[in-house]
Length: 172
Image (cartoon, rainbow, N blue to C red):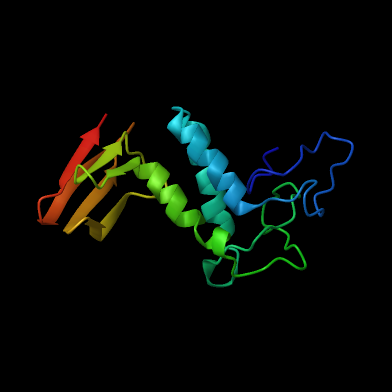
């Protein structure tokens, strides 16, 4: 079902497959991000990074890097961008959330506002992303600034600043 840009709504091997069909072969970025986050949650980090990378690369092909609602599920070909779906909404709210959903999955975000704690569970960054900084992340009345940098298997986390008494925990 992987087109090279994301997951199709129907396998290319199915009789009803049509890469230009709204629900029978197109790629919906938010659906791919949900599936990717599920793979990450169940320890399939390589598969997660493959899907996340494909979506970020697809985003670079759209004006302003704004993901559309969906695009055609044609196979990825060298030198060609994803094929636009003619009437896709762009920008589109759930597609706009894709990068944030993927970043949350990369970092393993697990906030617990009641306990005033943010846990990062086995954070990992893709090969094309060396580091990321999160600034002014609110957790209750507290604010956290932290940096995450890519390592060989996982990522290093550095607390840059804390305003309030929130706890930042990294679980490996």
